[in-house]
Image 1: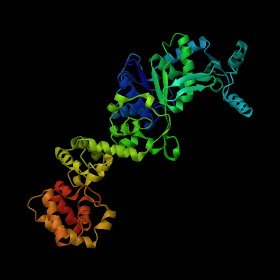
Image 2 (image 1 turned 60 degrees about the vertical axis):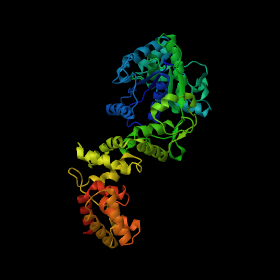
Image 3 (image 1 turned 90 degrees about the vertical axis):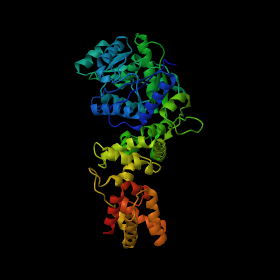
Image 4 (image 1 turned 120 degrees about the vertical axis):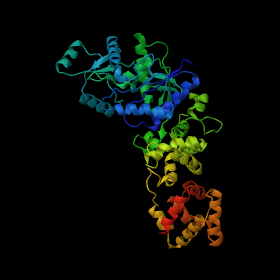
Amino acid sequence: MSNVRVRFCPSPTGNPHVGMIRTALFNWAYARHTGGKFIFRIEDTDITRDSEQSYKDLLDSLRWLGMDWDEGPEVGGPHAPYRQSQRMEIYADIAKQLLASGHAYHCYCSQEELEDRREAARAAGKTPGYDGACRNLTEDQKASYIAQDRAPVVRFRMPDTDFTWNDLVRGDVTFAAEHVPDYVIVRATGEPLYTLVNPVDDVLMEITHVLRGEDLLSSTPRQLALYDALKSIGIAKGERPLYGHLPYVMGEGNKKLSKRDPESSLLMYREEGYLPEGLLNYLALLGWAFGEDREFFSKEEMATVFDVARVNANPARFDLKKCTSINGDWIRSLAADELAKRLAPYLVKEGVLDAAPSDNQLAILAGAVPLVQERMETLKQGVVMLGFIFADEPGSPAFVVDAAEAEKVLTADAQPVLAAAFTALSELEAWNTEVIESALRGALIDRLELKPKVAFGPVRVAVTGRRVSPPLFESLEILGRERSLARISASLK
C-alpha cells in the first residue's frame, strides 16, 4: 500500500487544539503503517481569520509532537506550494474551467433574496437549501443583473442524484440529492472557498485517503461530485479518494469539545509540562484501540498496528484525569537524565535556574530528579517540587516558606522540634542521607518521643517551604549542610 497518500490540512486560525492534533496523528500513523506519504498542507485562504503567527505555531506544534511530514512547508515536494494562499492562480483557472464546462454557473442572488426563499421553503415544509434560481439564466437575465451592478458568486452544479460511499469508519453512507443543493465555490470578490480549494488540492496532490473529523461528513457528497467534474474535464486522474470520518471528541456535559474549552488547547498542555509522547498516547485512545487492552505505547508502536477499520464511530470522551495519568506514566518511563533535560526549561522559565544553567545547577537537578520522578504527572509539578533546592543559589530566587504552610506547621509547638533537629544536624561530621536520617530519628523520635509526622513535618516545611515535598532526608543531603542549617535556623528565629 505504498501508494497511500494522506493529508493534514489545518487552517492557521489560533492555537492548535487537541481534536486537530488527533486528526494529524491518525493520518501520520496510517501513512507510516502503509509506507505511504503524509502531506502537510496549510489552508490559509481566509485572509480575515488566518495569521502568520498561527502558521508558525502549527509548524512548531507538529515538530514538538515529533510528527514529520513527507511533503509540505519547509520540506517541499512535487506539488508545491503547500500553502493555499500561494495557489490562488490555480484555483482561479479551475473555476474558469468549471464555468466553461457547465459544471458551475454564476449566481446573482442577494443574501436577502436567499434568506427569504429559505424561510418560504421552511414554511412549506421543504428543505431550505439553494433553490437553483440562477441555474439556467438566459443571457438577457444575466445582462439585467449585471446592469444592477450585482457581483455574482460561482456555484457548483450538483447532479440530481443521491450520493453513496463506503466510509472507512462508518460503512455505507448515503445523502439524498435534495439535501445537497448547489453550493458556492467562489465568492463575489473572487476569493475561492474551502468547498473548492480543499477537493482541488486533494486531486492535484493525488490524495488517496481522507481521514478527517465527523463534522465534515456532510461536505463529502459535494467533494465527490466535484471530483467527478474535475475528472470529466481532465484534471482528476484515477479513482476518488476514500473517506473516513473520525468520531467527535466530547468534553464536559457530553458536548463536543470546543476550541473554547481549556482542555482543548495544545498550548495549555505544553505550558503545563505534558510530554508530547504522553499527549499523543492519550489522543490515540480517543476512538481507536491498540489491542490486547494495551494503553501505553509510543506513536511509532501505534503506527505498526494502526488500522482505520479499528476506529470506533462512536463519540470519544476526553478525560483530562486519564490524560494526565498517562502522562505521568511517560514521565516515570524516562531515564532520570532525560527527565532532567526536559524539566530544565520549565525551571528556567520560572526563574529557578539561570537562563543558561551552570554545570553545577544541572548536576544538582540530575541528582534531585529521582526524588520526585515517581510523584510527577507533569513537568510543571517538578518545578514546584524541586524549586526549593535551587533557592538561594546564584541567579535563583531567595528561599521563601509558604505562608499558609508556616502558619499551620511552624507554630510555637514546633520550636523545640526545630531546635533539636538543628542541634542534631550541626553535630554531624558526614552529610549524607543515611546519617541525616539516623540523627533526626534519634533526636526527634527516640529522645523527644514524637510520631514521625509531628517530628519531621516542621523540619520539612522549614527546609522545603511546603508540607508536601520530595523525601526529606535525601532533600537535606542535596541541599547541603550550610543551606539546610540556615533554613532551620531561620524558622527558629
